[in-house]
Length: 285
Image (cartoon, rainbow, N blue to C red; front, top):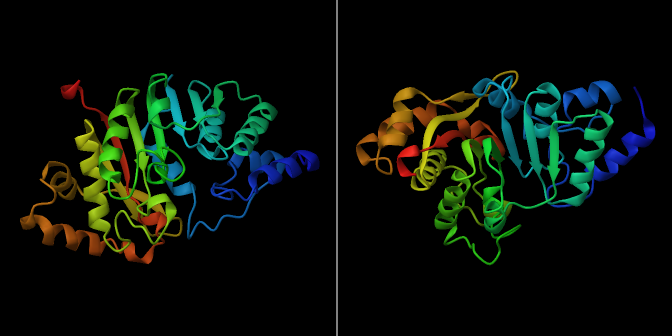
């Protein structure tokens, strides 16, 4: 059903020229009903591969409470809430125009199981966060010190901050699906991990989660096909990364051979970010 005024309003909110505008896809059900879409080049960056991986890892047909941190214009929150009425999902987003974008679609489609929280989940706000069965945290953490928690983070202490942040978040959820960028604040001139060091990205991210008291269940990396998709890394590689001590020297050749075989260098920086699925480590409670 074409609704020109509604589409015009959504387009204005979506294209607000803020730092994180024009970032997410428009959910499929919105495109189909309203005929409204935004052009995203998914060869460079997109949500489809991550969404499909998310669906493959969790059973959303069961009742559960989900938090979407940094919900942006609501692709994940809206898509999940619309598809799975048994879940409750909280979309946490600090950009007021993006909040309004989510709210308009939520109201138009009468999505009663979606709750929009207009806030940034910095260290302080995590303390007041409700408990979730699952938290989605995609590409937010590397903006700490630039977009939020500016008084606590710089490039030099980013690792220790990340561990503290993830440790706090562990108290608020049973599971997390996580992805981060490796340029601090999105600035290519300030890499947390250099673009070419795909193994270091895996090792760094696994380490901060373990130090923060999480148990890593899965690590996935991108695979090339007609439609890019995320695939869990090989079991022996997973065991080295998770059980090794900062990637022991004796394992370096095995790890590098595997990474080289995956041809991650053919992808954009966005797709060279691994995804981790972790659960709360009860042994540290």
